[in-house]
Image (cartoon, rainbow, N blue to C red; front, side, top):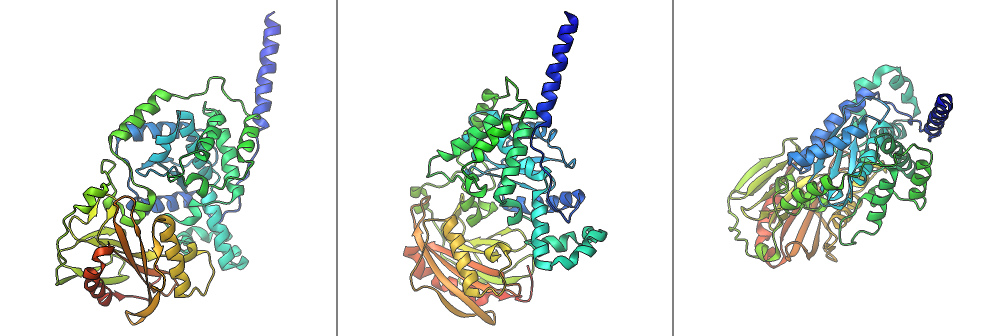
Length: 475
C-alpha cells in the first residue's frame, strides 16, 4: 500500500514537473546594454519621472502594492533587479515599467480591480517587461536604426557601458522615454505570457489577469482607460493567456484577498478624487502632487479671485539654461524639472487646473521617431495633436496659425479653444513654438478664460517679446 502511494506521489510530481516544463519559453531579445546598464538607466529615468508624477504618499496603500509586487518579483526570473513599486495619483487605468525594476501603477488600477489577483495581473505584466529587458531591447534597436550596423564592433567590444547615457539620449533620453512606455504587440504578448507564468508561480491565477482585461473592455467610456491603448490588444490576447494557463500549475485556491483590497480602495476614496494624466501633464506636478487635493468645481473656479497682472516684469531662467522669459512680478513660479515651468497669478493655479497662466517646456515631435528634416510647422502640428489628445475638449481655432519672429528666428503661433469640463470655463490656449537645433520644440502655452483673453493679451505679448532662447542647445 505504501509503495502504491509512493508511486502515485512520484507520478503526480512527474506530471507537475512536466506541466511546468511545458510552459512557453521566452527568449530575451537583442540588447546592447548589460543588466547593470538597465539598473542605471532605470534609476536615472525614475528620478526624472518622479519630478513629473504625483505619487500617492499613503503608507498603507504603498505597503499593500509593494507586498504584492515583491511576491511576484521573487518569481520573475531574469536578472536579479531590485524591484521597486510606486502608486501614481492618477485616475487613468494604467501602469508602466522602467528598466531595472521601477514599476508604476496608477491609482485607477486599484480603484477598478475586483480582487488582489487582478492587481497582481497588472504588476506581473509590467514585471515581465523588466525581466525580459524590453525597454533597453527597444532602445538598442532604435539606436542601431540610427547609427547603423557599423557600430556593433565597438559597442559589443565592451564600450557600451561607457556610452550608455549617449545611446539613451540619442533615442529619446531618460525619464518617461516612449521606448519604455509603448511596446509592439509581440513584446506585449511576451509580457502577457510571462506574466501568467509569474502569477501561477506566486499563488495567483492567470484568470484574474484575463478578468481585469475584460473589466477594461467594458469600462465606462467617460473614464480614461489607457491601459488597452498603451498595451495593444489583438483579438486573441485573452485566448493566448488562457492557453498558457493550461500549461501551468495553477493553485486550486489562488489568492484573491478581496477584503484587503477593499480596505485600500476605501482609504483612497477618503483622500479625494485623483486627476487624470492629461491634467497632470498640463498643470505639472506642483498642482497635483498630493493625493488629498480635490479638483475645483465649476462654481468654485468661476469664483476664484485673480489679481490683475503687474506691469513690471521679473525674469525666469530655466535650470537647463535653454531659455529666459519675463513674467508679471506678482505671478508665481512652479518649476518642473530642468526645463519646464508653470507661471501664473496667485489663486489661478488651483488643484489640477490652470485658470490663468503660462506653461513653458520642451517637446520632442513624433516621439523621436527619427523622421529627419522636421519643419517647424510639422513639429507644431504634432504638438497640437498631442494637446488635443490629452485635452479632447480643445479645438484649433480656424485661421489662427501663423509665423512670426521670436528670439531672432521663426516661431509659429496658434490658438486652441474649448470648455474645460473640470472648471466649466470657456478656455483659450495660445500656443507658441520655436524650433531648436535638434528639431525639437520649445513651446509656450498661455491659458486664459476666453472672456478675458483681450485683457491678458498685453501680458502674452510682453512674455513672448522677452523670451531669449539658446537655439543651439540640444535637449
